[in-house]
Image: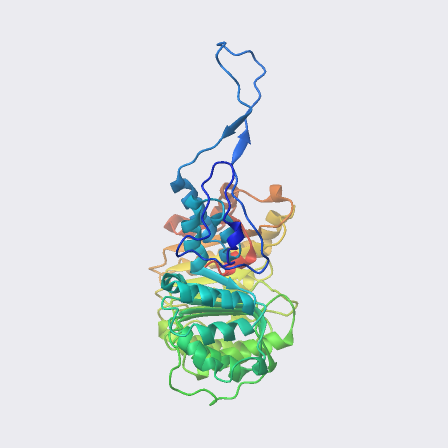
Length: 467
């Protein structure tokens, strides 16, 4: 949430201005001090060269578009659901009075902070109007871990409905935070159920563990590119009291082959398993952790066991190392309903081997996703060469067997990166389906075969509810 500047409440071109003295509205100054003004939305009318049919007809050169406020509110709602919408939402709120309240609703729901100055501005806003406290749902902290200390110390018990905390690109420096920071975090974010950490560096696993255990209601945890300066997990540093019980866990590492990230992932998995946080886990997502010893991941699956309903495995290599996730044994997850496998063109045969191992009989959906960065000319030839066709045949035979009576969907998705070139080389959904159907005849006849062609970013597809 960028705090709106007071000088920005201006009006031009017929829109009614918003008074700076209006009670209950924020009068804080944003960091960049930008001023915004409202504007008219116009379009050029078509120039008609023909003579008018009636002497009283005129051809306007400009036409003002007047849309109902409800349509603008729907547009603002759409913008408010985008990634990190709080950064720019106030820009729309400063257009006119009719847009302001809807924009404020979304800007307060998703607060984004990058400095202690912005954090103190938010604190002052909360002190002046109690409504703002209950409006906040998600807080995102960028580039400065000191902001977490400020918010935690100043807003204890003042965010009664906050349910998500996100921390991006921060380094946890113990000397810069209050000695009782974890007590402050617990008091401020006691209602938080979802945490996302991206590119965060911790000094040790113990500091990371204390942060997680400071969130008693935490149920969904995602981390991406988390590192430890001094890696190594030592059991016993976390009290058995007050540990959260996770229902969703997503672990990612980036495209760099960084041994620190792999070490951190191993420590994180050992921590959540040893601390008994995954006994009620319903979803596991393992993304691009190729160098990770599969025994650690196997222990995670076995610990969750009967509670697991969904497993999301990304074996498309994000680094030069060889993936191991397709060697996991999912038989312990006896109630597993959904299995998603992300592959590159080299791993379809290994996916067939994975599916050949005993899978739970309650499996309802299997999704195989092929992600490509570029739409190559020979993409179809690569996907349907002899090796792939043999793997498709094997998968068709395996998943159409009598042990999968409740299986009601087997989907093969082709996902093209949104920034890929040569988009004209992408097959249509009709062509994609026509290519796949003959190679999976049993699944097609059973009526469970689904195909799709999707254009999206990797991050959106991996974590649509987080990113």
